Image (tube, rainbow, N blue to C red; front, side, top):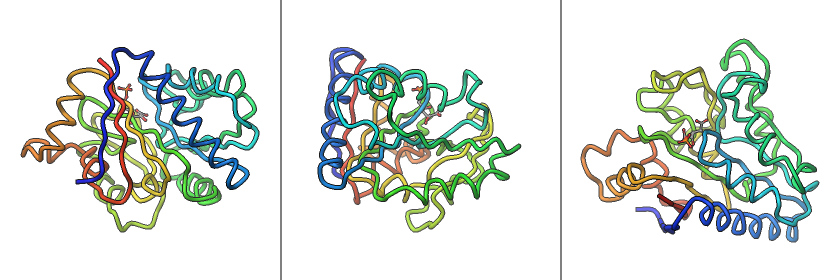
Length: 234
Ligand SMILES: O=C(O)[C@H](O)[C@@H](O)[C@H](O)[C@H](O)COP(=O)(O)O
């Protein structure tokens, strides 16, 4: 199994604050060493408190680039847009000066926008300094959805594409997702989750319980190339 550590917090605020401090330290180290930092973050509902905390951290924000691990294929005026969440809760306060690289291109479909989204990610300095994943109740992470039409390709450890379109019954709308190799090309990897259901699901994955084989988050938990830090709160 990968080098997985789990930190449990009493509540969401403590979790968000601890992760923000840890990620900010990571970004500061990157800026000191290389003059800039790149972070890829998840959307959904869980990261909001973390984003707000991170936005208040003191660091050289104009040298920081923020992108997404996945995106729902909707414009950033849509409530479901991960870009909208990042803009409204992370690119605020001190962090308003950061650069943002969205995955949504305005094309009609993820397939039509794929080459542009891929080019945007390829253009970023690699590796990422930090990747912050989330997880759904169905065991998806990024947009690695159970039954997703490109799940096998997106989670292929040897795949070369960095971005894949994803259509899945549980996804709500068409999406794009960074591939597993793109997500693992990072100096630090975090998984931010809340609730006992997600805690139990992750335990089942780590214990190799048979039923957990179909949870796509398994590809991140069981890989051995990057240590994974799980941040959990009730
Ligand atoms: O766009 C997305 O949906 C996310 O990036 C996704 O992978 C998210 O991390 C999980 O769905 C968890 O979402 P919640 O935090 O809302 O449970």
